[in-house]
Length: 105
Image (cartoon, rainbow, N blue to C red; front, side, top):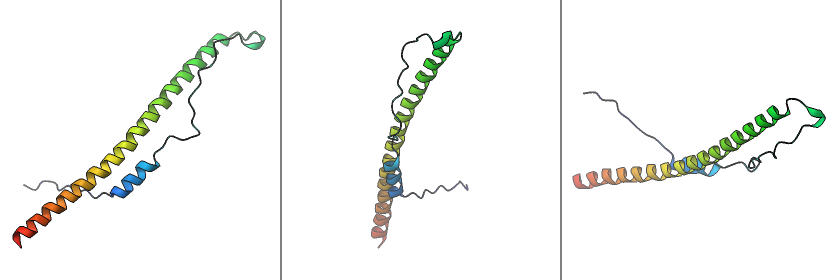
């Protein structure tokens, strides 16, 4: 029964440092919805189509940025939790090994 051996070597401090670096860039502002459709200058015949496409693209971009901001917050929290979990598991394993050594000693 030669099962695969799984090892995990993590660096909780690196995980915490990563979590601290994950941030929403200050340069990214919320997307403003364009003003209501207004007639294009010089009577552009495709004005309504361009205005509708601009509104749809702007709304899609705003939704994407909101989701990305939420995903970054989730990633940051997950990295911090992973560091804590890894460290707690590592310490629990060390205590278990120490307990066995003390029992045998």
